Amino acid sequence: MKLLVTGGAGFIGCNFIYYILAKYPADSLTCVDALTYAGNLASLERAREHANFRFYKADVANRAAIFDIFEAERPDAVIHFAAESHVDRSLMDPGIFVRTNVLGTQVLLDACRSFGNIRFHQVGTDEVYGDLPLDRPDLKFTESTPLSPSSPYSASKAAADLLALAYARTFALPATVSRCSNNYGPYQFPEKLIPVMITRALADETLPIYGKGQNVRDWLYVEDHCAALDAILRRGSIGKLYNIGGNAERSNLKVVQTLLRTLGKPENLIQYVTDRPGHDLRYAIDATKMRRELDWEPRVDFDTGLRRTVEWYLANADWWREILSGEYKSYYVRNYDAR
Ligand code: NAD
Ligand code: TYD
Image (cartoon, rainbow, N blue to C red; front, side, top):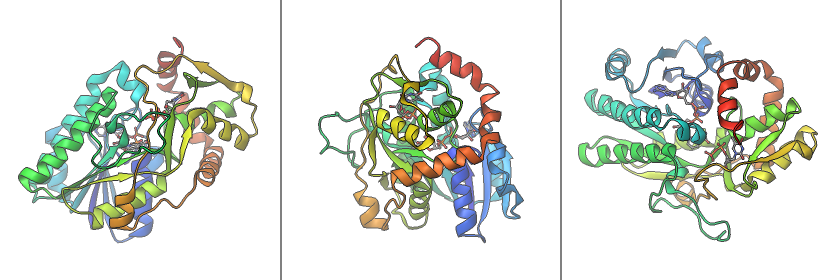
């Protein structure tokens, strides 16, 4: 299979590339990534040693550049990770989220149609469903839960999902969509909860928890997400939607406390800061369809995954120190100093 991966220099994309290179050494992989602040060629260092791996620096919303790459590469399938992915940044600058997440997806869908109805998978998020109450643990998101996104990020991702499903229905494009819960693991950019907390705790800096830390997320180790995407890409039903989740709901406070214990750091590093506007209370995924139809289940439990993640950040301090020394500094001031 000739696979084209967008956003492969980001967190989940690079983990997916390593997953595929290990599992299907004969597959050829082309990565297309604009290398925004979140894209990092250092994350692809080992991939670039493979003869069947190629990298293009390009913006998915740039139609001419994307069509040129499709012409040169003629992929069998496209898996679309590239996105602006951070809720807090979408509150500061919604426009780039619409451009990349909506227009970028449309450009890729058009390219897939033009070059022979190429198989397309849209990597989506459970945040498109909005949130669930904290006092109804029986409720979970299913594939038929109505869309109710809260942030410009999740609204733009909902639009992208709908475009992919519309192209499948109207143009018979062989497309699928997945919606996954919060991922964690190696190579995650230190703007998301878990790597913010690991990198700051290691430096004995304060750990900014939004509101009271009672918001709940369902955590999935990134490798389990990669396995789910691989199953959908190869065995999923065309035109269909799949929810992917970790069955590991935790409040943010609980996650940070577990991390502090793992790192041997004191709880007085925690600092409660002004809440995120529109902050979703709880996400929880019902992944029955993935289990029933594709025989997929998460394999890595939260404590094991968190330990592996901490070990990775300890062993790869050069990777994240480099990030913390760049543009990240001004982002951190913009997002946290006024809180
Ligand atoms: P990330 O921010 O770590 O990486 C995004 C990548 O996309 C970066 O390499 C960046 O350079 C690239 N990119 C951004 N704009 C681009 C553009 N215009 N053209 C080409 N490349 C561009 O994101 P992530 O956490 O790896 O998420 C990947 C995908 O998975 C996203 O679509 C996200 O919505 C989805 N998702 C993420 C999570 C999560 O917990 N991280 C959960 C569910 C779904
Ligand atoms: P995040 O990793 O940004 O993912 P998402 O908002 O897409 O779920 O945040 C996860 C949770 O952690 C969310 O409830 C917001 C909270 N959070 C903090 O309390 N402090 C922080 O510094 C960050 C980045 C997130």
